[in-house]
Image (tube, rainbow, N blue to C red; front, side):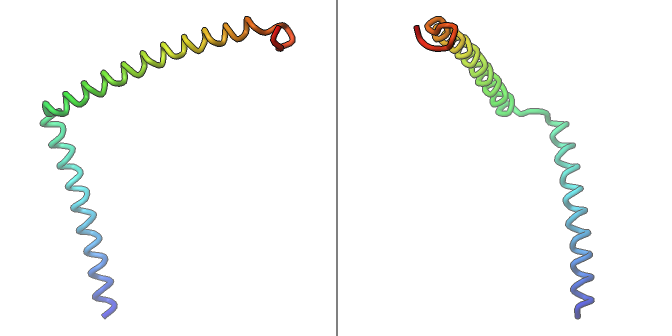
Length: 83
């Protein structure tokens, strides 16, 4: 009885592995043939615009932080204490 179970597990594993590999290969082929759909292109475009906005916002924030650091440094003397 145990032998039958072991054989079933081994063959089931082989079949599952073969199905997984074939499914992956078929999905890759389908993706390469079709390219991006209209919705995929729009989503990618929206994502690129969002990333650009984030980058510009972070650049502006960096400039503001540098300005604040300059203001704070002007108020301190050589020894690091406020004048």
